[in-house]
Each structure stands twice: as structure tokens, then as C-alpha cells.
Image (cartoon, rainbow, N blue to C red; front, side, top):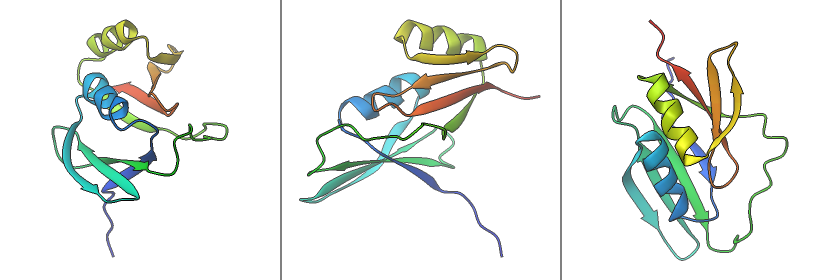
Length: 121
């Protein structure tokens, strides 16, 4: 039996700010959207279309989400790590760096951490 990861879900407070952040910071684009009276789900894809980030906005949850200790994250491989680091520094969204490991993290508008790693050869 085989399985393939298809998406990760993050609940978000602002359905304008979050997709805009992911578009600017990571090049993710909206693939589709589901909307009803209780929620809206926006699926964002990277250029390969192999994985989606599902952003869920709940009508009855206007407050920020409690993320616990924040010890989970989603990782992105940067083809040009130095250029990505410059862009994220300009955006002011770098929240943690580990130069020894050659990685850093950015924080989205809801407080989710995203790991940025260089392309491994």
C-alpha cells in the first residue's frame, strides 16, 4: 500500500493577508477555493503542483489561533537560498536562523513557522 502526501492545512485569521504572504514569500498560487456560509478553504500550490497548502478561514473564528509551543513547521527548499534569504529579510519575516545548519525560518501572518532550506545537490 502506498501513500502520497497531498496537502497541509493551516487555519488562518485573514484570508486576504495569508494568501498574499504565501504568494510573495514563497511563490505559492491559488489553485482552487471552496466557499460556503461557515468557511472558506483556499488551496495554494507551488510551481510543481505536487503539494498544496490548504488555508482554512472559519466564519465564527475571528481571533488569532493558539499555536501551542509552535514546534511544528512546513519546510520549503529554495533553489536560490541567498536570494530567498535577502527577500525574506526585506519582508521582515525571518524569525529564526541557524547558520550552523544552513537553514532559517520565516513566520506567516498567523504565527506559523516555515523552514527554508537550500537545494541539496
